[in-house]
Length: 344
Image 1 (cartoon, rainbow, N blue to C red):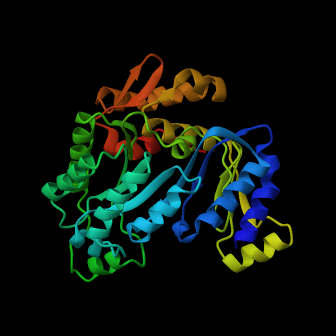
Image 2 (cartoon, one colour):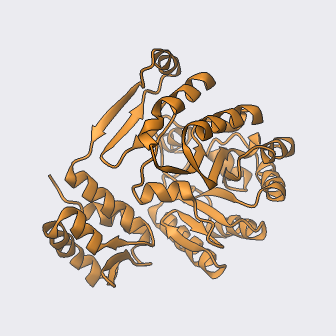
């Protein structure tokens, strides 16, 4: 697999010709099982084939049970300079319900150890967990604040098919997700973090001291990116593509010098709708000037026409030729965005 990954990195260098790589991100699956040597070999292949920024952000996703003190120390000696840790909750009862493999002690210890060796750490939390009341949610937030973490990603719990949570709900062992509770906990999070100097720069992401995720910010700003490996997604401004999921077929295809992917060409309407969706999720908003330049005055007029009811109800506001989601509208931003889409 490592040989195939390095080969795909090399194959695709022309896609980033004369462009600078600002972020390298190890995510999906469990990349923390790789040794420091293996991680460095993949990163070195990028450096050998691409123009890489001197200040490149190199992130590794990991779960707390993968991050012993020994593993964190090992990673600190690699070229990885940012950790994204999937904690979700610091309470055992929540982790059990979510069917997470780590314990609350492992979550606490990995944050403690990681903070000794890394300056740039992001922690994932989940709100809206059944039976997690607001006081427990606040304790999760307060623990991170006491740990001096400068980037937090928080997501509303969703029930995925074929999960333990789905089965518990179907059997009536626990109640289904309460949207009202999720909304309450989102605004609790927003108010507490803002009072401690965090910026809600994207709906689910909060940063202090300007430690924004370069990787994720590129997605929301619709920058080009290349995804390497099975299931990886890529974007070249006009097309989105994704590699096949099967590991064996992926490796066999790469051996034949074939990138095993499917592609979707984006129409003008697709691109417009993405600009609306991402713009309303971020604090950059939607630039009406940029929108008109890229899509034409008809698209701008249609957007303002459909947005008017949300402006009147204070879910969206217009300032200096930009549309922004208001604090009141944040939790509903995806639904509002979909109502502003241009239809075929």
